[in-house]
Length: 120
Image (cartoon, rainbow, N blue to C red; front, side, top):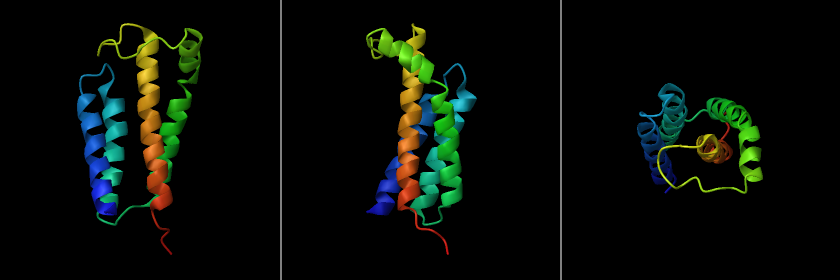
């Protein structure tokens, strides 16, 4: 069961990476989601490294924190919809989507880190 869950998340984050190929800054997003997918794929075969998982989670968390001012602005605007169209027409749409995407990756990696056994 655990292997199937890891494969599911590997495929999900690979899909996220693929969908970001047309982003204005695809290298950053494809790398972020791609490495997350890779870490889940490695975990599916029992070869995961807690240090790598924790390090990438920390990097993505710090990146996510840089978007907090944009999230605060979005809240001040009354949390307008970010789902109206796929193209981000307002700056808050892009920031909120990016923040939430990183939040999903960070939470997934933290869970992976917690469930990965320590190597003795």
